[in-house]
Length: 367
Image (tube, rainbow, N blue to C red; front, top):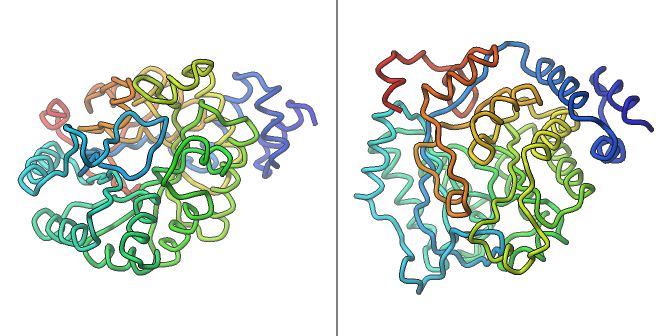
């Protein structure tokens, strides 16, 4: 089937096959992909509102039992710069976040090999009782590691963490949901079916989560599409994903960059193309977030015409992609200006995409 015929099908809102998505990667021009993805965006989100959230990505430890060649952040337990944040350090970060209008804490490690589930329960219950902030925490690889370390099922781990204060799961650690890729890139980390089963278990418990994809390294186009399909299939089954977020591998300071000098960072053209096709293929996840953190504010703005309806987070703090060389930062006022310049209406939201009261000018200038 020709790209034009597939795009005509996509314009009508019909579900695409894997082969059709692969054909779009190979044969569709970016302007035509943009037009189709933009139409799909309005099918899912008819308003001209572009939402965003104010949160902080707190990495409670950088100690990790996994060894991921694409990651510049993790440390082994005996490294001189290994850390586990204490409650005083966490308190400072959370109080700063709330003072800046933040309503969510994105809490992720490191998969520390020696911390037991009681450590996480204590941390969550303390955060909930002290601050009452939405805790969006623990990627599927972390939950998988907690399960192995504590000899508990995913359901037992998630149930205890939810009781302590866990509110939603981030989609981190998905990268590419194809075991060939996962086995080549990492050791000591959950494989595809395990990642999916963590989210399936959480969804069946009534929880919500996000779906993410890091691409632009060793995966093929077919494997990108297979990852799309894994998300779409699970969403058909559970309906538990609130949003899809894709971003490009950041190679600086990573072992993968040294081991594979033939690889190079993919650019904004590939990011926009992949995001647009994701919007057309993943027809059952309502929201797609822009990855301005890896692409910069202006490409984040352009992504609003390639299927994205959300600018993600102001991200008061972010450490993982920054360690790999991504240094883009945006304050709230600057982010809102990008949205407005593109002809949309910026609005704060919470994790569940419920719009929040509009900030006053002084609040905007503070973030």
